[in-house]
Length: 336
Image (cartoon, rainbow, N blue to C red; front, side, top):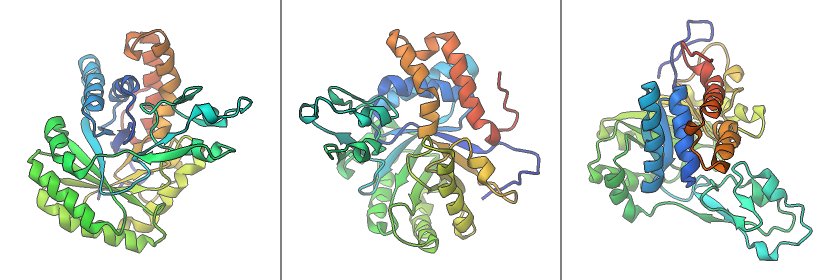
């Protein structure tokens, strides 16, 4: 773990863009990856789907040609049921004709309309489920089966993998680790994402779970990342959503095994200011807030049947917004 203080000369921190483990909106993903590659992220995390990965690489490659930047590509997988791997659904035929449609208004990706949920745009935040006054919206699981994981890894050949886990799923985690090893894909990094929001337990128990996974993963001989998942998929709701990951970091970071420590889950533009002056984590991952910042611009370009990078004015504005989000974590960041 490397740390620096707010009072020291700022150095680059690791920054990751999270496109969403169940996000299949290929057009938006290509644009997101082009924008945040240009803004300077180090890695981009996407769903473990070949079509999604192709779109991400198209966006990355466009920015590489123009700006000379090339972040690594990570795919998200899970060792069991996880809220990041779900989608919402409902039958629009049974909705009341006079419904004010709070689900449509609250959806951060514009995935809901009179036809129901566009499953490609839905990334499983769950806000629509709680907003429906008649409880007509439900969720369903969306993730790779372990039987297809090795094949997907071999086909995609990502730079890194993130494994979403829960504290008491050690055996299932070990099975996933073995599949990764059997795939013989040469990874540069393996990230482990876990938090306390889905487990009613202590920071000490979470640290123990990370150490158990360290013992499992160390034979892979790659750099390990411990992602502290504060308040999942909530960074765009309010600045205070950032506090959960910061509090988790403060409680647990001295207890963690060797590797980079990354904040996620509710992270946003306020995360940096909520951190104390003594230490800053190795890095941060931005998901819902990063997408929401630029999604209206992406949608505007889509209405004109264009990629956002085909519209220089909108692309420049999107990159500027992205750079402002990244600025506290990056040295020598120039915002035009």
